[in-house]
Amino acid sequence: MIKRIVIVLLFSVVVYGVSIAQDDLEDERFLLTFVPNIQFSPLYVAIEQGYAEDAGYNLTIEYLNEPDVVDLVAAGQANFGMVSGEQVITAVSRQRPIVYVYEWFQQYPVGVVLDAASDITQVSDLAGKRIGLPGRFGASYSGLTTLLTANDMSERDVELQEIGYVAPDVFCTGGAVDAVVVYLNNEPLQIQLRADAGDCADVESVRVFPVAESTDLVANGIITSTELLERDPNHVSAIVMAFDHGLRDVINNPARAYLLSEAYVEGLPLSDELREALNTLADEQDAFLADQPTREDIIASRSAMLETLQSTIADPAELIQFQVLLASINLWDADQLGYSDMASWEAMQTTLIELGSLDDAIDLEGIFTNQFVDETD
Image 1 (cartoon, rainbow, N blue to C red):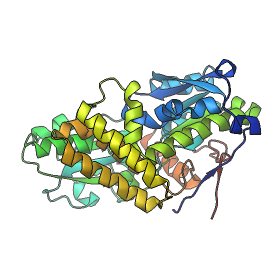
Image 2: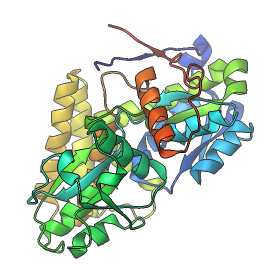
Image 3: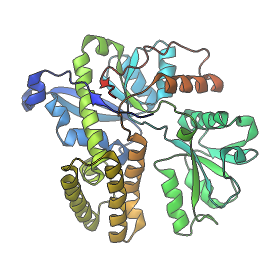
Image 4: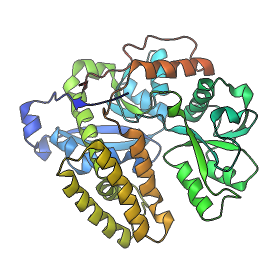
């Protein structure tokens, strides 16, 4: 689906045009799941580049478990969080007053990885094969179920093995499983890195079956409380706008985004050599962007960045987090950022009902909004 976007500007002229004095900033926190990670660079960039301050907010980040994020936002103890679409449907089915206001991941980030040399060349070839996954829960299980269903299969057609969150370790021991369910922006890269080093049994390269190629499932995005959305939509718009600005910056200049994320991600690989290379690439990219290149040209420029770094940095492991960032961008990028459609919500709800996570279909009309995203032709 061709997507284009213009974020609706709901700030006053004063907020839009003038940076607010530090003393006048309103404290605001944003809840994330997992731990500090380069994948959260859009929010890091939004803070570092002052987009949140320009909107009037001193934005801080907290990292919690996903259910806790939902609970705090629903209770009005936090105003914003980032959670998966399945969490939103489940929460609303239990009368939790939350609304999804911005789709961050435009593609569902789950897929199945296998040895490219195997006889599994299409999803239907997984029949009778051993598939490792963290467990029968969460996005991995939802994604696999959707992938199988879209290809006229079910869990009964494969042999599932619960392996925890160690897919690269299990897959690269050789013989334990035929395929593993993974997050597309990380684990395929880890497995391929091991394969390139000769440390993944007989595997030389991998094949990936992304869930998104079969079905468009709503993925991770920003939530707020129903109460805040109704009482102060300008507040919601301000935070959405800041995040959107950060996201666009990351998509357009990942070298700069990586450097700005250093203060937030402990242990982010950044040797003097890599820092110098990224600074050079970031400056060159800024000059390139000044000429208003097309989206296709920007996509090509990101690939060129990686090629330059690979020719400069001797240790491939030092670039893995930059590659994670690039792979994440591929899942975020679209002609229209932030937008989610009813079909992707319906597909997710169908999956949850099939899994038994949802007893009955709910009304999806009020579960999400695109009121901060103006669709254009």
